[in-house]
Image 1 (tube, one colour):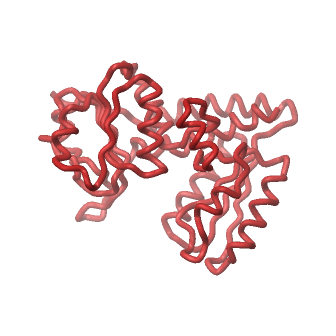
Image 2: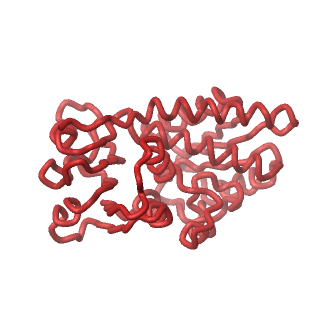
Length: 282
């Protein structure tokens, strides 16, 4: 059995067409959706991510601004810039690209963003709303994973779901969204004993550790849905995920590739969150 590929690239294009239509409808009412992206420093990966986010906004008819600052920008000055954007009526969403320089407290920066403009879904009030099943914004990557499950009409309710990785950005919110959809959820982390004992029981397996090939074919239940959130480089410098893709795809029922899987969905769901913020504001 060879797994069916869940293409995040194809699904993203479909969702972005819908977002473009919603953006056009808002613009005709005089409320063009607006996203502000802040980049501090010269991190090469962050520059690529930010460029892709801004282009995606423009392609969908959003108003977007990119504010770039040197790595020595003070924390107080960054917070002042965020406060200005909080009060800008043309801006519906604010995104500060992580990681930030070491002298800036990322948690303080995230909390400075107005909760109603926190389209990343990282603000503590949005995390609390997600925990209680009333999310204002769903964090983009976990939201994208749920859309992929929806796209293949997978029956999440009652399924055994295992999330490998417990970060605030992916692992924890992913577990909450799966739980709200009716799955029985296990969260594993770097301290988990006998990881395979858990993953082999998973109907839905989400892997988000940043460790290449942490999940191998013998750790996967035949027919499972495997969603690889990892982004690594192999020995040849090519992008790869956390899952041993070549071998796992011969066991799984569905699998996401890297690149072209969950990655494109992350930016797409950022657009969805921003359009939702604009519609809510209107």
